[in-house]
Length: 149
Image 1 (cartoon, rainbow, N blue to C red):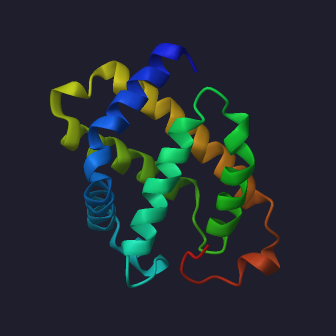
Image 2 (image 1 turned 30 degrees about the vertical axis):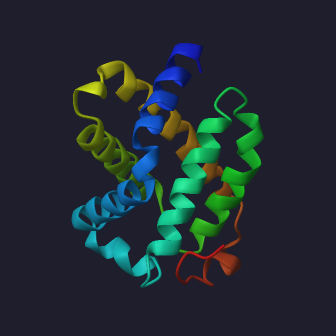
């Protein structure tokens, strides 16, 4: 990723960081509005999940200059999501919802260059997580249940 794209992502995240938990709640509201069937794949109380999302985004952004540092964690995260039968279409929806939420929160500051940088980053994250999901055996995948860490 080019330094300019990393800078845009950091600036965008810095703009929402003071209200990151509210941003996370808005993201999940939008996600479940777009795909109500996904709600059952999450625990009833979303506050811990929202914190995990914000922490993951923060960690991801802090490692943009060294993406291999996050690869192992994203791979493990994808494997955990495999138990929920999360597929490529779901990752596409999550990415689109993240872009939509960023656009709503950042307004005109969310330029086409920002959108391209986020889209590239989320595409990479999805690919690595799907690779992790692919490493899970069918027997382990059947365990299912809400997302837990």
